[in-house]
Image 1 (spheres, helix red, strand yellow):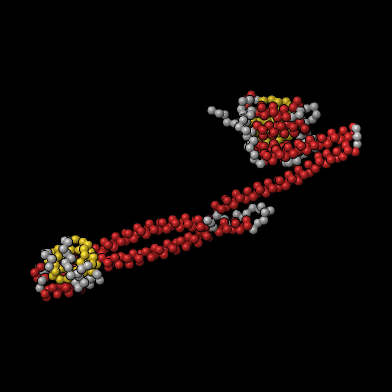
Image 2 (cartoon, rainbow, N blue to C red):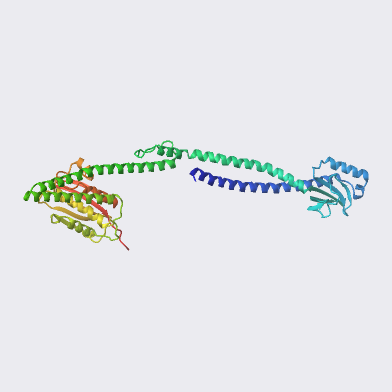
Length: 443
C-alpha cells in the first residue's frame, strides 16, 4: 500500500468515525426535540380549543353552539393528520374535527398517551376543563413521515459534506506528498555513478532533514568509493614492485650459479616477505574499516598491550618502556587485538625512522578516562604538509621501507575504538600520541 493510500485510509477512517458520531448525536437530538415539539403542539392545540369554550357542558350539546365550536376549530387550521375531540367525562363526544377517529380518544385519561383508534396508531393529549375533556391527536404514521423528512433534510448536507471532505482529503494528501514524488523522480533519473547531493530547496522541514541525511550518506558512499578506487590503484602499484623484483631475482637465479644465484634467491625471498606483509596489512585494514568485531570479551591492561606489541617487534631492545603507576590496573575498553596492532605499527614506524644508535621511548600514562601511549623517536620528523597526509594509504617518508599502510591502519583502529591520534614534531625527533578509552570500573 502506498503512503498516499495509507494516509488517506487512516485520515478518512478518522473523518468518517468523527462525522458518524457527530451525525448520530445530532440526529438523535433532533428527533427528541422534534417529538417534544410535536407533543407541545398537541398541548397548545388543546389549550386553544379550551380558550374557545366559555360554556358549560350542557350548553355545548346545543346544536347551534356545537356548530359554532366546530367552526372555530376549523378556523384553527389543524394540520393534516391532526384531530380534535370534545367529549364529556363519561366519554360522550360533543364535537370533533372531520379527520378525528370515530372512537373516543380520551379514555386513557389526562396527559399524553399512545393508543389505537379506528385501526390507526395515534399520539394523544387530553385536557379536562369545567367537566369537559378536550383531546388532540396526531397520527403516528404521519408523525414518522414528518420526522423522516426532517431527518433526511438534515442528513443529506452531512453526507455531502463528508463525501466532499474525503475527496478534499485525497487531493490535499496527494498535494502534500508531491515533494516525495519529486525526490523519487530525481533518484530514478540518476545512473549508478551519480552520487551528487539532492536539491533541498522548497522542501518541507521534515523532508529536508531526511534529504540532508540522505545527502550525507551519498557523500560518505562517494568518499568510500573514491577511497577504494585509490586503494585499488595504490595497491596495484605497491604490489607490482615486489612481484617484479621477485620475478627478476628468480630469472637471475635461473641464469646464474653459485653465490650469485643464492643472492638472487635471497632477494626473491625478501620480496616475497614484503609482499606478504603488504597483503597482511591490507587484510587487517579491510577488516577494521569493514567494522568486523574484534572483541573477544577479554579486557587487556595497557601494560599487557605494550608488552605484546614489543614482543611482535623485531627491534624491541631499542625501545624504552615506562608506565605510570595509576594506570597499571585500569583495563582498556578497546579490543586487545586492535590496541596491540595499532601500538605495534606506531613502534615499528618509530624504529624505522629513528637515527641509528638511538632509543625509542614508549610512555604509558593516564589522561582522564583514556590511556595515553606516547611513542617518541629521534628522527628528522616531517614537514607540515607531510603531517596532514601521514595517515593516508601507501604514504612513504624517504627510503625506510614499509608498506605505507601502518599509520592508515592505526587511524582506522582509533576511529573504530573512539580514541584519539595526534603527531608532533619535536626539537630532537618526532612523537606520536595514541589515546584509547579505559573501561568503566566494575562495582
